[in-house]
Amino acid sequence: MTGFDALRSPLRFLQSRLPEIPHRDVLEAEEGWWKNEGIAISEAIDRAGTPWLRMFDRLGKRVDTILYPREYQTMLRRGYRSGVVWRALEEKSMIPAYLLIYTISFHDPGICCPYTVSLGTALPLAKYGSAELQARFLPQFALKDDSAWQGATWMTEIKGGSDLGAAVETMARPAGDYWRLTGEKYFASNAGAELAVVAARPEGAAAGVRGLALFLVPRYRKDGELNYFVRRLKDKIGTRSVPTGEVELKDSEGYLLGPADSGIYLILEVLNLSRVANSVVSVALAQRAMADALSYGEHRAAFGKRILDHPLLRQQFENRLNALRSAFALAWDAVQLLNDVWMERPPYSDRYHLFRLVAHLAKYWTAEFAVDTAKWAMEVHGGLGVLAEYGAERWLREAMILAIWEGTSHRQILDGLEVMERKRAHKMLFQRLAEIAPSKELQDMESEVEQHLNLPREEKEALAEPLFRRLAVLTADTLARTSK
Ligand SMILES: Cc1cc2nc3c(=O)[nH]c(=O)nc-3n(C[C@H](O)[C@H](O)[C@H](O)COP(=O)(O)OP(=O)(O)OC[C@H]3O[C@@H](n4cnc5c(N)ncnc54)[C@H](O)[C@@H]3O)c2cc1C
Image (cartoon, rainbow, N blue to C red; front, side):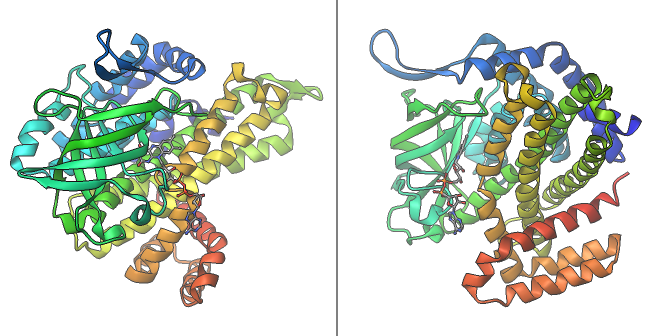
């Protein structure tokens, strides 16, 4: 049974997959805190529901305060203090942040949403912000105390998140050294954040995605008044601790990041950073669902022995453990590639396009794997699996969100096709995979991808999913061979 032991702890699993783990002591402390305190807080918040919006103060002034239970603040601040954001800024490396995200999301996948969107705000600010903007906003993200200055990444509007070029109606008008933004963001996670990055169209800019730009929008205007308004918070099946709201921008003060005509690249950089986090969270969630199924399987008996000792179930555990290792290898490859390329600006290198392809494969495959594993783990619990009081059903609710936000699986497949078609990113992928383990299977897959890319457009899209799935699995399996 020893092969399954690593499932019980995120740190042990990481140690079994990675040759070295920076700041191991920090991860150990994190895991210890979650076991002793965090899990109970997280479970209570999941049952009690989303934070609460207080729109007005007692004198009727609009305040839009998000009210959290005190324990939630303790849980949230811990991750910031441990370094999910400041370490990326200080150490100029993504690795510590994503290791923390893995460790934390094993216990609570939802809490990693605020951490990810805060990273997705701080890093573009550090990369593209003017000296003045950095001096004004960056120090707060670099603090190591309990202040928990938060970011947010708001692109999606009521008409949809997949087709941003058609759906973003938020307009930006120049107003001297800043801009005024007006519009509505329909799925705005971490509503109430101190600073958000927001997609908007500068007045007179082209239609479609090419006309979009990325702006920093602080919670308060320079004169101290609210700069954006939270219309309502959404009641979701998962990430229930995260306030996801509808946000109204009304002549809100905004600051352009990077050149206006490069906006879509900046937006995609933010999304790709989140997609990598989403992949890491998906694998941690799958590990957690398997760990819960394992401990149930060790104690539940049927037909005279532990259910885990029945050949069919045991084989499923073994197969799924191998699949978990592969999914981790894929997600971690995306982290490492991101770590190499995140300071690049357009026009990007070939390695950047390779990163994009791996990020699409990872986001797609790990989220599908998380959903499938959470469903399977529920089934291992039998009827108890569907009861809210035992927790197995939570992983399925959380996993469904991972498959949708930051671009659904459809989006990942189509964007993955695009980067293969336009940037030939698959060539670099196959070259790398062949260096790890050349095989006939890889050669066949490469020819299949080439043939697929030559299909007429309708057919190419219609038939893309099985191809993309096989490419993701083959990539994940091959990468897993280089792990410990
Ligand atoms: C809990 C939660 C939190 C979120 N937080 C944020 C946030 O903080 N910031 C933010 O910007 N967004 C956020 N989102 C929005 C999220 O990114 C979108 O839900 C997602 O991008 C999909 O957009 P949509 O829901 O509008 O679906 P749509 O774009 O309307 O798509 C509907 C369906 O059509 C499919 N589809 C669309 N185009 C195609 C095509 N060409 N081919 C095949 N299928 C297609 C989609 O894949 C999807 O299945 C959040 C979502 C959730 C659920």
